[in-house]
Each structure stands twice: as C-alpha cells, then as structure tokens.
Amino acid sequence: MPKLWNETIDAHRRAVRDAILNSTAELAAEHGLRSVTMSQIAENAGIGRATLYKYFPDVEAILLAWHDRQITEHLGQLAEVRDQTDGAGEQLEAVLRAFAHISRQSRGHHGTELSALLHRDERVVRAQQQLHGMIRDLLAEGAQTGAFRDDIAPDELATYCLHALTAAAALPSEAAADRLVTVTLSGLREGHLTPDNQSSASRQEHHGRRVGHSGH
Amino acid sequence: MPKLWNETIDAHRRAVRDAILNSTAELAAEHGLRSVTMSQIAENAGIGRATLYKYFPDVEAILLAWHDRQITEHLGQLAEVRDQTDGAGEQLEAVLRAFAHISRQSRGHHGTELSALLHRDERVVRAQQQLHGMIRDLLAEGAQTGAFRDDIAPDELATYCLHALTAAAALPSEAAADRLVTVTLSGLREGHLTPDNQSSASRQEHHGRRVGHSGH
DNA sequence: TGACATCGTAGACATCGTGTCTCGTAAACT
DNA sequence: AGTTTACGAGACACGATGTCTACGATGTCA
Image (tube, rainbow over all chains, first blue to last red; front, side, top):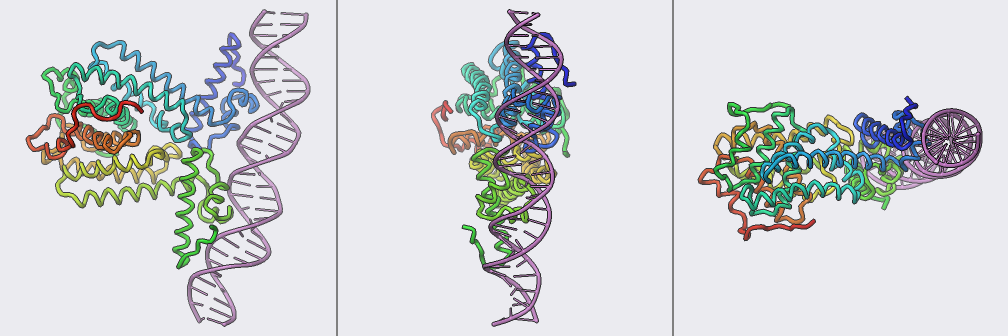
C-alpha cells in the first residue's frame, strides 16, 4: 500500500494528499474527532510519520483541508445544478433539494458546524458565505418576480434555508428529505400562494396523509 | 482560588464539578475543542491534576457531562415555557421562540451537533430525543385542531423545526431571531391559512418590508 | 473534643504522541 | 547520467496522560 507512485510527481503528491484526507475523515468518523492523531493518520494512510509532517503541520490543518475539499466539491455540484435550471424559483428549489441530499449523504460530519467549533477559522466562514451568497441571490431574484416572500431580507432567509435543510442528515429516507424541502420552501412563500406555485411544492408524490416514519 | 470549600461536603463536590465544567467550556470556546487538555482544565479550574482525575476519567467525559448539563438546563426552561402557555399552537410557538433565543445565546457550541460528532454517545441521542419528543407532541396536538399541517408526520416536522431554529445562532439580532421563528412557523402551516391564524405569526411588529441586516 | 473517613495536593513514574532532524534509498525530472 | 525530489526508519527532547504514593486539611460522628 505504501507504493502509490503514479504518473507525474505532482499527481503523486495530490494522490498522497487525498489519501491523507480520506484516512483522517475515516478515523474521525470511527473514533471521534478528539482522538485522531498524526501517528494514526500516517499509519492508516500507509505513509511514514515524518512524511505526513511534510504535507501538514498538525491534525487541525488536515481537518481544515478536508473540510475545504468537502465545501469546494459541494459548491461545484450545487452551482452545476443551478446552471442546469431556468428561472430563479426553479433554480432555488433545485439547489435546495440538492443541498438536502448532500446533507443526508454527509451524515455525521456536518460540514460547517464541525470546523466552526473545532477551530473557528476565517476560511471556513468565507467558504460557507459562498454557499450562503448563492442562495441569497436566488432568493432576492425570486422575490422580485413574486415567487418568494419579500417581507424578510434574503440574507436571513438564506440562513434559515441552510440550517433547516441540515435536518436532512437526521432523516431516515430520501423521500423524507424531499418532504423536508417542501416544508422549507413553504416557509419562503408565506402570503405568496400564487396560482402557479403548484409547480414545485404541490407536485410531490401524493401520499395519503401522514407519511413518514414515526419512530427513530 | 483553590479554596472553595462550602457548607456540606456534597455541596462542595458539586461546586468543584461545576467549576470543572465551566472551565472546560471556556477553554474549548477559546482554543478549540481538540486542544483542550486535562492539565489545562485542572489549572484553569484551580484544582490539582490528580484531583481532576477523581472527578472525570478524561476530557471526553467532561465534555459529555457539560453537554448533559446544557441539555438538561435548556429542557427545563423549555418545559417551563410550555407549561406557562395554553393551547398547542400557542405552546409550540412559545417553545420554538424560546429555543431560538437559547440557540442564539449558545452561539458557538451548538449543543447538539457538538458531541454528536465529538463522540456519538447514546446519552446525547436520548437527550436530544426528549426535546424532539416535546416538539413532536405539540405538533401532533396542533395538527388535530387544524393549527398545523397534517400531511407530514410530526416527527419529521419536529426535526425540521429544531434544525431551522439553530440558524438563530448565526443571526445578528433578537429581532432577526423572531423573524426566523415566523418563517419557520410558516413552514408548518402550508395550506392551513385558517382565518384565526393571525394570532401568532401576523402579530409581529409591522416592519415596512425588507427588514433585517444585509451584511454579516 | 478526639478518632476517623474523605478530600485535595504535590511529586514521581512509565507510556505515548508530538515536532524536528539526519541519513540512506529509490524514484522522477532534465 | 546527474540532479532533484520524495520516502522511510531511527533518534531525540518535550509535553500530556493515567496511575500511584505520601502527606496535610477538612468534615463527620461518637
């Protein structure tokens, strides 16, 4: 396993870096954040301990780098989803739905909150603001066309959206996550039940009242 | 400072225990979770290191105990708020509003998410379920009287509520937190704009459209 | 009041993770 | 082929850990 020399030398470094990040995430998920150690990471990644120090100065930095990778990845996915849709309202719904599903898949590490507490880093804040900005802009645009409420600043509504949808991580099924998006979108339309808003929320699969799991 | 001997011996132990928890929370908030050490805690709490080991086996346990204390405290406050109100709809709104304000005050440690990642402990899950259960029951009761939507299980709606309101921690003002509660409640009433629902959400202070801060 | 249990403290101890360094080896670049 | 770059192993001092002992101070009970 220690032999993962690939093509160019630069590609190799990236491969090792990724292996480090993956190993760290694995260990953190397995034994908790506080117990992750440089020695463990090195061993798990199949590299020497001294080598590890040539990539990262400490565990903190590795966790930050891992978080950065997650955020960048997700931001790219969400931007792609947005650009493949037309109309602010539709775009927002598509993005929020994608975000909910990402939150669900990322059960456990809670991308944001994690490093925010781990060590409030400026980069983390800025990364989160990118996502926040994307949602905010869509909300502002949608408010002008009447798709969303305009009695509350898009800024605050974006915060509401992102937090509400992290609930997806605690939900048991994809269908439940979809319903969560519906509920969240409801909060964005108070007093704006326009005739054509059946396009999104109401086009849900029809369930005979009271769906979803009741126990944990 | 090392002399905090009070009344009975049992009261003393509780005082020391609290001092330990407070010191730990302080250190964690200051230098991040991973850097908190038993030595630091002992010094900060004004007790000997060996003494600390007679209260808690490791940092992990202290953080868990601290989390337990927070949850219990907040649960009590919320139950009190609930019992001082009448009617499921009003009760829910009161509890959610209180929860939003607690979340705001607890900026930083994110009661739940914290230990959930720190080390997923069964006690943490159960504590959170108590709060979840309180909200769920109020939602179920309110759904019967028509105050809330009944097309989605109260269980899922409760998850939505709790996550959405943690957004309060990121909001800049109490007024913004109030608006957040309004938006969140909107999500619970989709398709249920009964004639008398002006009692809660609509009795907000009247702001001339577009309120709240736009920058962070 | 005196005997005793309990608590806190300081110090010692082996163990482990850390961060840094050197040296020898092997692969990639030019 | 010669140079650059990366890796691994071992060594090192240092700090944190978890445990233990001995000793002083305090609360409890006869």
